[in-house]
Image (cartoon, rainbow, N blue to C red; front, side, top):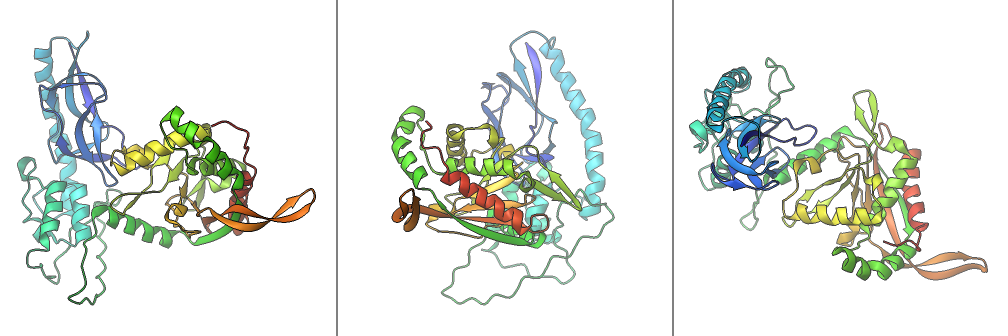
Length: 441
């Protein structure tokens, strides 16, 4: 027998910690490799953490509501095999090690908490951010009952309180009372928190319905506002003739579904053209860091997916330039399905370098999409419609019925001028119009 530490996995480029929501397995349970063991939450997504080893869950090192740094142990798994010595003596050793490490960790957390929250009660970064967005004052947050260890307020507690808050008499603004501060570890502990802007007065009647934004909608709203504030948006439009693509897809879609048990949509074909255009114009695959431009090596395409709730999520196809149309089709289907089922991993929502949004799926012919920060470009794919168009032939120009679509390219005018932004979308259209109809999917 051997004892193996299960650690908090990497949750994306900017995520350094996660909150334990609930354990799906109990101590003593047998678990298989890749089987989900617990559910955790970050500021971006809730997700399940799978086991990297098969065995028995020997010990939980974190409880519901605990905030654990990426790379820190969260459980001990007893596995089959040599090494690890006698399990009866190893387990207490792990407990002692955990106890010794807990004290410094608590000491590190304490000063930060005292600097940002005038309270003897610990609040996780996630809880503080939710409280700030909901306008919950610290005195009010102190009254929220906690179900976590030592009475700690968990994400479930604060969301339940917010949900039921509207049914109780609203807490009026108490003048000088401060709202719970945002969790901002990058700022110095002595910096003063920015005051929250006062909400604009809204006039409603008895016939109006007031709908509280959920957490995801609030995050989307904040990021869209931030993007428009950060990047001066410019949008260029191009119309493309995709008749050959429509005919090729209609010819192969049934065979593709029989062979791969997946639908062959237009989206992977469009993404393939976008990837080729990015290769031709790599300065569209950049990010801005102050006065520096970071030219990204990998081409990671974000794909906007509408959720059943009406919200939007953007999973990322990593290294999209290494996939052919078939590979992109399978990847698009997989990400879209798991996005709607809330099964995406946090790492699948980060690292994008350029984004594609298919507004044509809603019947829209074009759009002016908002850039996903810190990217500098996003392409909207319009609906494919039949139109009369001029066709150039060896016998002369003719009028014919063609399948046409608009491509809308929004880009960050700080670093992308109209020439580059326009050439990129024109090149995408060129690749679509020169699509090889003889290739096999």
